[in-house]
Length: 556
Ligand code: F6P
Image (cartoon, rainbow, N blue to C red; front, side, top):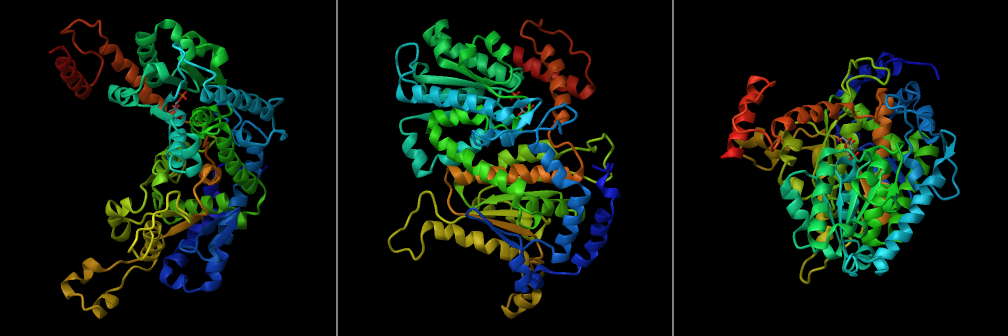
C-alpha cells in the first residue's frame, strides 16, 4: 500500500473541497425532483432500505467520494481489519469484532491462531451456563433459582448491552423467553446507581455479572466490591461463588477478586471495549435474560452486515455509503454534529451507545502516524427517539444549525395498537412523523408559500424554513433480535469507514486517560483516614477552593 500521510493532501480531497461550491448552489427541493437521481440513492439489502436522496449530494459527489475512498485505501484497510492485522497500531492489536459473530466454520487467523474457534469455545460455555441458570439447575447459596441479573460495567462494558436489552425488551419473542426474569445494569459509581440497581432485588435470587475488559476500571471495581458486600452481608462469603461471575480479558484479576475462574467468560484484547457487545460482554447477560438462541439471532443479524460490508461494491455497500456521507457532511459541508433519530422507543438507547462507539473512536486530533490533523475528525452524536425529540431539540434542526439526521424507521411495530374509532394505528401515527420530518428538513417553507397562506407579514421571517437540511432514512422490516444486530453492525462499520478515510486510529482511546489519572490525585485528598482540617495541597486555586468546600461539607 502506497503511504499517504494525510488524506487532505490528496487530489480527491481537494477535488471535493472545490466541489462544495457546486453543491452550495443546489437545493434539496430541486434535487428531490430528479427521480433518476433519487433512484440511484436507494439501496436495499437483506430486508433493509437505505434512502440517502436527501443528502446534499449529486451523482458527481458520490463519484468523488468513491475516489476519496480509493485514495484512503479504504478497501485495503477493511481487508486488513478482517484479516486480523494489528491495525490498532498504538496498542499493537488486531480489531476483530467481526470474528465475534462469525459462523463456527469460519477461519480468521490473528497472531497465528484461529480466533473464531476461541470465540465459539466461549459461546458454547455461555450457552451451557445460561441454560443451567435459566432452567434452575444452577442455584444460589440457599438453593433458590437465580431470576435476576445485575450486570456491573461501564462504557463499552455497559452501553452496548443496555442498547440491545432495551431494544429487545418489547420484542414479543424476547418477552416470552424473558418471562419471570429481570436484567439490570449498574454503571455509574454514584451510590444512587447502586441503590437503583438493587432496589427490590433479593440477593438470594440475584446473579451479579462483573463486566470489565481490564478488570481495573475504578468505577466498575468499586461497584463490584459494593455488590459483593451486599451478597456477603445477606448470604455469607461462600455465596460469592454462586452469585458472582465475570466477563473479562484479565482472568488473573478476576480470580484475585474472588470469582472462580471457571465462572469467568473470556474475551480478547482484539475486541475493543466499545465494539464488545457481541462478545461475552453482551452475550452473557443477554443470554441469561433472553436465552442463547435468541441472542444468536442478534449475532446473525450483525454477521449479515459483516458479509455485506466485506464483499459489496462501495456503490451498494450500506456502511460504506453512510460512512462516506458522514465524512462529506463533517469535512466538506462543515456540519460537526449528527442526530440519531430512531422512530422506535425500543431504540432509545441507540444514540447513547453510538455516542461512545463514534466519539471514542473518531474523536482524534492526529493521524494514525501521529501527524496533527489539519481538519477536524469525528462528529458530535446525539439523539432521541422520534417523536419525543420533535418536542425537544428539532427546533434547532429545522431553523437553527444544520445537523445531518439519521431517521430510522421500522415497518412493523413490536407492540402494535389499533384503537377503535381511530383512523390510523398508533404505529401509523408514529411513522407519519418519520416520513414527514425528512421532507420538512429538505424542502423547508418559503416566504412566498407563507404569503399564499395569508401569514401576517411580520411573522414571515419567523415562519420561514430555509430547508436544504440533509438526512438519510433507514427502514428496518421489524425490530427483532436479527434486525437489532444489523443496525448495530451498520453503525460499527460506518464509524470505522469514517476513521479509515480520515486516516486516524479509530480503535484506541488515549483521550480518556488524563481525567482518570487526575481523579487518582484527587481521590488521595478524599481518603477517609484524612485528618480533619488538613490543607488541600497541589492543586490550582479553583480546584483547591472547590475541594475544600467539599471536604468541609463532608466533615460537618
Ligand atoms: O472509557 C474508557 C474505557 O476504557 C472504554 O473504552 C471502555 O469501554 C470502558 O473504559 C470500560 O473499560 P473496562 O471494560 O476495562 O472496564
